[in-house]
Length: 213
Figure (cartoon, rainbow, N blue to C red):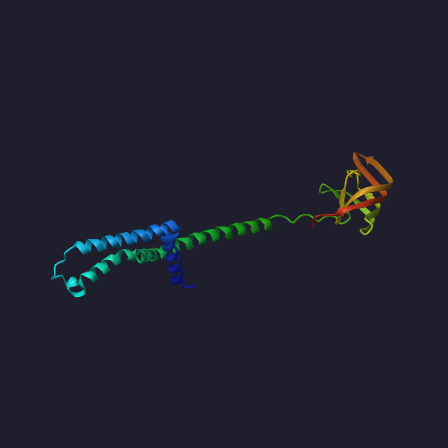
């Protein structure tokens, strides 16, 4: 769509909305035009124009009354012309406002991209680790998962000093719960605790809803 077509559409829409945006406004506008035209017609009917008047002599009294009574009906075209002349400035302001809004949006996106670039990537999870509340609490040795049967077995879970065996835990794509342990060896050397579970049998509760990198 060309620029002047856009100006025309804007001016026409605003003129139509100003006059006939609602039914009662349109009716009032038409009634006012008819009333003014009737008043002009009656006033000129009673007015005795001089015979030497150029307009009177060439088009006659009837023509003068018709032309004068038609003047109120020029309100819509005149209002349209006024809106048309004002439309370019309005469009210019709208385009400037849109440009400022677009620039602000672009700046916000650039700032977000810069923030994401500046942040270090999340640490990769140990594929052999088990996690509770997002914290690694152990590491499995020789795992065997069978999703079809809903079971998982580990020969050992080591480094499990903070492992809560009564709670669910995450292992790769699964949420597991402990069902049986063949052995539970604990020790403490110099204030450092260690724990190793052996012959661990687990039940697969469900698949994890999300997956961390």
